[in-house]
Amino acid sequence: MDRQHWVYAIFFFVVALSVNAQEATPASTETVENAVANRSLQVGELLQRAEAGDTNAQYDVANAYHTGIGLPKDDAEASRWWLQAAQKGHAEAQNSIGYLYEHGTGVPKDYEEAVRWFSLAAKQKLPAAQYNLAYMYQRGNGLPRDYARAVELYIQAAAQGFAPARNSLGVAYEFGIGVPTNAAQAFELFRLAAEQGAPSAQHNLGTMYFEGHGTARSYPDALKWFSQAASHGIPASYAALGYIYEFGNGVHRDLVKASGLYREAAEHGHLIAQVELAKLYLTGKGVPQDYVEAAKWFLRAAEQGHPAAQAGIGYLYFQGRGVRRDYSQAAAWFQKAADQDCPVAQLNLAFLYQNGLGVPVNYAEAYKWLTLAANKRNHLGAASMRSLDELKHIMTEFQLRDGKARVSEWTSHAHINLAVRKTETDALDGYATAASALP
Image 1 (cartoon, rainbow, N blue to C red):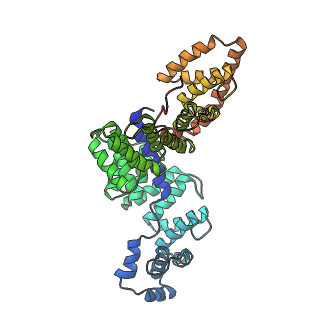
Image 2: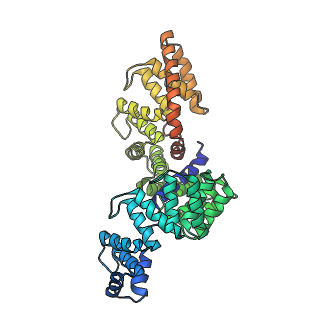
């Protein structure tokens, strides 16, 4: 992946997070305050009405217990009152009960029960329930995965102006999930949701402007929407802003500002930001050169499976920078990244096998990794090809046959696992060369 597609990768990652977080949660604090204060109802009167069977009062009492406004916070009591209202057909209460079962809050986690309650509320055309039920279909939680049905429900909720549904429907059109790919339609849905204040849609709209996808490219508009999403705490938006300032896309290049934005995202667990921040510390750009900090951030991302970060921490272990030199650790991290088809790790792992550093000397294994790296159409592929030609001159016929067999075996088995991980890898691989190849 070239560097221009880095922010696009972030886009996919933040959408996954925003959908998983489900913005259609039980009633907001403002709703409860309106119920308790603005309607001029005393808590005691509200409880009396709830106990007398008033479903709206039962729902409001549940919300009060859930938020701790007007009544002591008590999830068990909230669940009890929501259930009473839900059993009498109160749509919002049914949606809330479904949410509790989905997340195991106050009740055992049970996706099938969540689906049942979301379905009851969705039949009453409650947009939040339509959205939540669509999400269950999208993920295959509690029922068979069905992207087309998820899209139908997102459309129903979006038609009622429900911002999270507009955002999720935009994602479906962006990636062709359950509908034909339509970048212009995705852009319009993101725009509508973003203008309603949905943070994930604001980030996604920023990405469309940055990429010029579904609309004309506009760095000022990208900056505007990323900034709005970042103000709501979206880590990927901080990372995207970091990229914009690092490379001066529509702004004056500012590496110091970029490093601060990357740090904000990195501290909230954003993988690409962690790798980018590690790279800045490694090179001393925007921050004082600090190998210990570089190692820290590479390691955090590496432990979460980021191949470029694994290559980066492996390189630091090889050089003994920021960590004690340890060829075995270097080999272990290069191995993890090489298994994910990271070319710099494959080249470096081959070097270790050829020279017996951290691993036994094994020319056939070195041949395998050099061949795989040489097949890449980039500068590392050319470097790997030169190293491969040199290695062939010192290999025996038996070693060459062994090496070729290893390449064939790796290729036949790896393509299955790599295909499964392709989407995730594309989203993570924003920094394709975490460290220079070994000498």
